Length: 95
Image 1 (cartoon, rainbow, N blue to C red):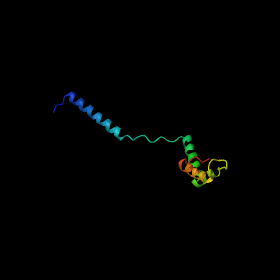
Image 2 (tube, one colour):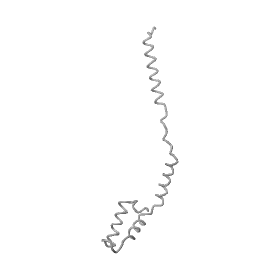
Image 3 (cartoon, rainbow, N blue to C red):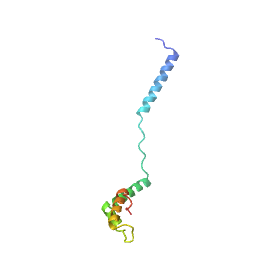
Image 4 (cartoon, one colour):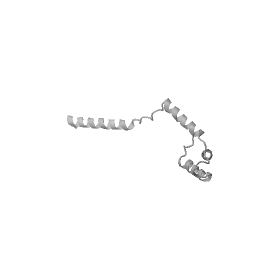
C-alpha cells in the first residue's frame, strides 16, 4: 500500500485535531473563585445581623409602641397598620 504525502498530511492533521478536542474535553473546569477576606467579613456580618434581628412579634410591639394620641388613627387602626408594615416590609424594624 502506497499513500501519497497529501493523504498522510490530511491524516496527521485529523489526528491532531481529534487529539486537541479530546484534551479540551478532559480538562477540568476552573474552580469557583475563593472569597476574599472582605467578602467573608461581609458575609459574617450579614449572618450576625440576621441572627440578632427581632422576631415579628417584637417588631409589631415596637411599632405599636410608637403610637401617639396625636396620630390620625385609633390605636386599633395603628396596630392593623403595624401588622401590615411588618408583613410587607420585614426588615423595616430591624434597627
